[in-house]
Image (cartoon, rainbow, N blue to C red):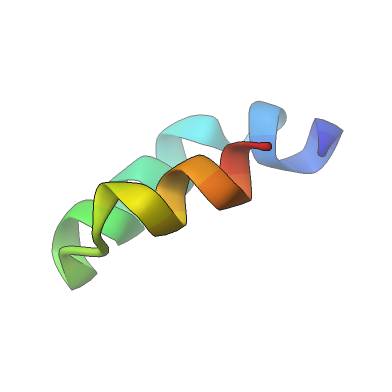
Length: 30
């Protein structure tokens, strides 16, 4: 979980490129 927060910017950029649905992002954030 800490890794996701630390690499939040990178993860968001990757998700935007792949266009992942918000639901999956919510699960990953949790």
